[in-house]
Length: 460
Image 1 (cartoon, rainbow, N blue to C red):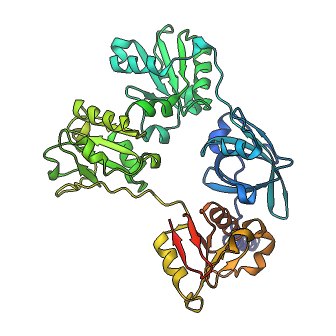
Image 2: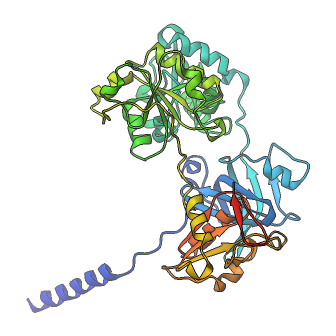
């Protein structure tokens, strides 16, 4: 008994020690989850999406899932492997589109990652008989699966499918393909069409390869995928998918309700649209380059919604969807409704970039006298040739390229908010991520700012 009691004391002590031990810090991911479908993790490599290029500081930002990496580069030694070659290294880097998948080889010294190679993911290469064009897919979708005699599969993960898909498509994510083969038709000669996220995405080609191994003889890939479809057509979203992908995540979207009796209840944030008034409503839309998600709702997801959605697409807006089954399907799913009179004016405010500070709040803080900025530090990360023309009074000036080596000058106190700015917001965001990684309480101004020698400034 004494022996067991002694062991119990030891066991209890071990549990107590474990309970109070600090949780280990999870390592930063080096390969995006979606890349792991086809690639393995390699030391000294990062796989993710290209984000922001800062030519003035010879650096760029990339995303690895939710994490941001800031990398420097030496123009004399950086190698860029890309199908789009520019006249200079800078031109080649500028040609990399935001969100494009890249692999980066780098070295690290004293916490600074320096890229030695940037490999831009090339377009998928398939034999001509293995592909199908946008025009061909459009004609088939217009006919429908029964008349067109086709089966359309979206190879993207479910969260992407929920954000909108090609009409008549069935979600069959490539990573789960082997578990979902029952979705394939019994007829091995049937026309199967796979698509995913565009010309560089390997998920639909991967689905094609698996289908061929199973004996399907008429399988093809729509290489342009969802981006190409959205450029010319509207997509569809199921009611539950819209709730989960947008409303639950508080992602702004423009919801256009065409029903004459919509005042009895509608989707959150919906704006009314009378018949034949699409052109007038479009005048209230934000500029197309902001790519606002748009959802068109009618009673049953019918012709009226499809017509308006296509009109919005023709106006240059990608990412337009029709609510499948319309308002009737939304009600049938017992999803939340907002009563009262519908708005008649479009209001769309893009979700701010993580870590950014509003122009108004920055202006308020920067306009205070330095002695009044309690627990706030304005950090100017522009280069000397820019700051010589003027700085905000009381701001600490450290070029973004020198920030890591001069961190001792930046007060590290949880009560002190460090707000970074440059001239455009690009280097300010890079500086923000560097500070955040080091444990600072930081924000950044994501806007163009002009400062004169008196310290006065304007934000565009």
